[in-house]
Length: 125
Image 1 (cartoon, rainbow, N blue to C red):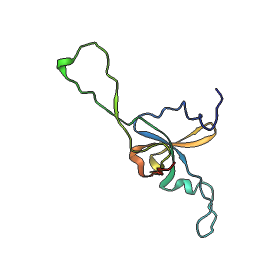
Image 2 (cartoon, one colour):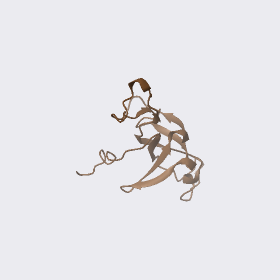
Image 3 (cartoon, rainbow, N blue to C red):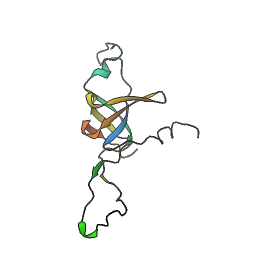
Image 4 (tube, one colour):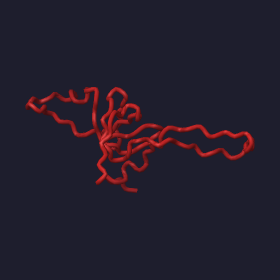
């Protein structure tokens, strides 16, 4: 299978309550016109980026009722409480909780939903 811009993230599975974020392009100039050295924006406490993939959510325990329990029977499928974040949302998140990864020469962050402070969702996209 050939890797393209559309399918390059298909094989990635995000686990639990985490999201995969592609950071927004960093400006190297302030509003007043000063040029920032590399890495200054990356050290800020709050960052923003686009959500590329979303984990299944928070796992919830199965409802164990002993009257229907067949010991050694089939295991129940895990159920999840879904996350608020959706693919395509712009996320404002805490940098200190983000884990930076590089995948196919692109920079991404894996961030727990608890570190996401705000989501901006464009319904038209």
